[in-house]
Image 1: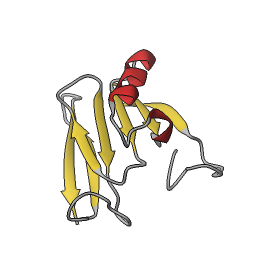
Image 2: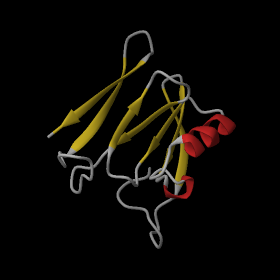
Image 3: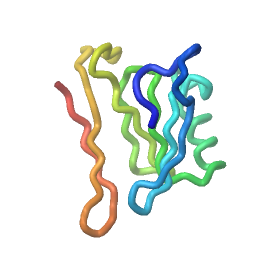
Image 4: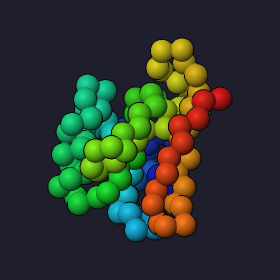
Length: 108
């Protein structure tokens, strides 16, 4: 599993694909896809991989787009939030009884 800051010299994997319920999910730190500028490169890479959901970090800003495919999310940051107001954030993903993903963006 990818956890914590995996920039530059970390021993943690840079990316990982896994299944969550019926969804193919791709976890990536996001910096090599220039997510600070736009998520379009990341979304294109996710489409090329055939994933349903891509979860990324790097920006320390929450982002949740479940309307377009693939779904894209960034939980933000609990320890160093960078969005306006700098409220710590996280996202909870749940799979409902029908197998559909639901997401809730939360602020601390």
